[in-house]
Image (cartoon, rainbow, N blue to C red; front, side):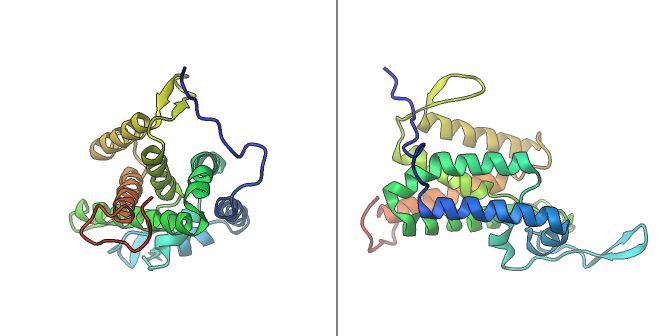
Length: 228
């Protein structure tokens, strides 16, 4: 019989880091509603190399620029309520179990390393495909960190069954992760689904994989901590 995924925390409190991230993302979304585009201008991830000014309907208009803190702050901003819900649902569903297994300290480090890695890959892909001009479009969302957590779940619980909503079929976590990664790669290369930072999603997965391999002692640089 298939061992379907049953969330261990359905009736209890959330682990502290997951709880803090859920609350933090929710509060920032409320602030976005009150402050309009102000938070996006300062804290979204803006491409490197955008022009300082562009010609607008009222003359020259200043373009927001990249700043180092955006490598983290972009992950707390979301485009709409549905965007926020799906990211936070995945964070709760997969992140709670990973935090309980790893501990809060390691989980927190892992999450933000994936967030930063996702941002760096997205910026690199944008720069490589710019042909001398980078369109000033911001990137927002916690998906980079969430995809890193998804990768961690697939590695830690590869044979755990997940019941998909669409289509409603069970699938092992390892195949779910591999399939999701393949879809993201295809969409990113073909540009089929415009407006979604597919390479940021892949960047979160790749960064997470590298960090887990490092912690497991599979890289030339050996960690002092115990193996996962």
